[in-house]
Image (tube, rainbow, N blue to C red):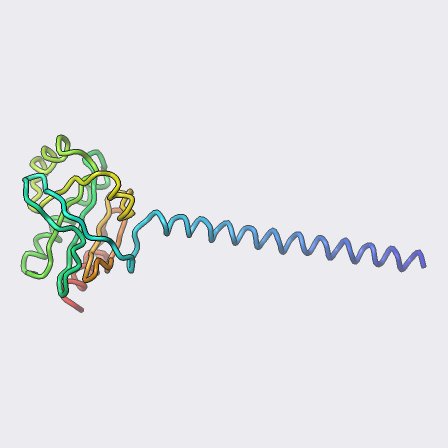
Length: 183
């Protein structure tokens, strides 16, 4: 009788240990999922729908942001004036803007996180040839573009067709151009 009690006790202990291990693995997986979900809520992604709004560019022109009109695309280039990665992105963005000049259904718009007092000299210094807006920070949260640089392509209905936070690569540029050409 005593031997069978010990066997049962050991079996229960092993079962409890196994349960602890399984639960620990599940907790780790849930933490990973929670981090991914937090990131998804904070960062704009392909497929997100953005609300349209009106803004005034640094040169005083009224522009529609994420207007979502049929058969049009809007490329948003999000930056701040102190970001070294944004400065590294400028040659890519210039190349993109030059390539998009032949695409009448596509507009390019810069979005600076900084006030006009910092953005206007930056635009002039770097020879940016596209309109640049400086909307208040609440739009940064709504559009989930807190990270810079960010490159977005917004299509019909304000749907994000392309989203990339970080410095552009040749592959990312090709993806944007494929969207514009309708490939």
